[in-house]
Image (spheres, rainbow, N blue to C red):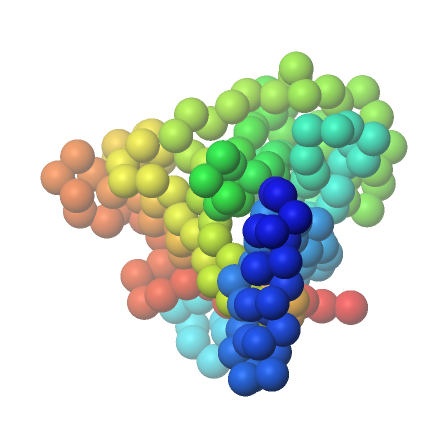
Length: 209
């Protein structure tokens, strides 16, 4: 970014602050996205109010901090009643696209249960390397800094293939804030009928201590 552009951005931010208007997050806020996605989260409050949602625990921790290609996160989701046997384990790679939007690439592992609980026992990940991961083609979530308070994003069209419960593709819609994460994952048949995932709306994961 050249000096004149930097001055324009700073001036806009200053004027917006005076007017109480939020300024969209810029590419330099990749660290903010990482920090807001890192931590322990729970949908317990939502599940207690609506029985159509389950009490799910979401754990995300940074891995490979010395890499220079953007943040990497180990991700684990489990029902509150089965914390030792997570039903979803992923690795996310965060980066900034050429258009300034943020990209969360999604990877799976060949034997994920070998790493169950790695968010609290990082030594389990000692031998894991990016080359060991399996890229989930088309499943990246593209996010934008909607305001200074949140990121919003989703997968693209029908690009994320899924064979779960008769689905042919899956979609993900995500909102990330300092207080928690809203996540709505759904699977669809070739006829565009929903075959899995929450029907009423996204899971509301609130940050826990």
